[in-house]
Amino acid sequence: MEYALEILKQTRKNIRELIAGLPDAALLHIPAKHRNNLLWNIGHVVVVQQLLCYRSLGLPIAVDEIFVNSFKKDSSPAGWQTTPDIKFVKEMLIATAEKFGEDYRAGLFRSRFKFPVKLKMVYGITLANRDEAILFNNTHEAMHLGIMMSLKKHVVGNA
Image (cartoon, rainbow, N blue to C red; front, side, top):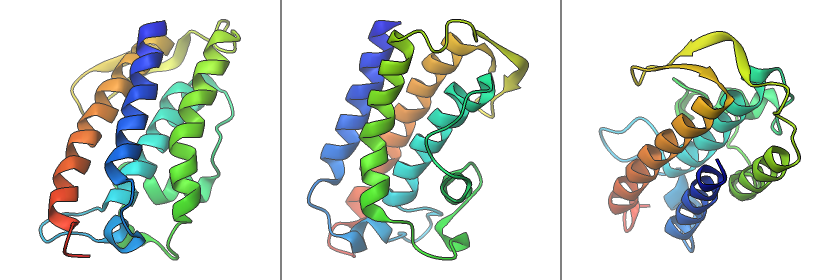
């Protein structure tokens, strides 16, 4: 599982590098025919990882409910009452990956392996335990990294 934790950290670093130097306007721009922006995708990977790998096991998460509601599945920047703190979203991208590795190595999840209820994912699979959640989360984050790469092509020069 150590390798899966390294993939998570590297994916998060790749996202950070992808957005490095972009102005806030580029992070917030929603290109035509898209529902979300770069910032939403960044916050979304943080929220999904927290919900899958912590909350589903009955553990507290590192972000508040306002953050969750802003970036959860089926949310959109169109529903934001106020723009999330961009600096905080960027910080959580790296901080939650590092904290997850620390928590895993410290044994936080050892006694909480199985989910109380299996989680059926829109992706077409069902998750039953912590390790499946970690592996699926990496797939989910890689998918969103690809989306962000595409979004960046649309927003650079348009924001």
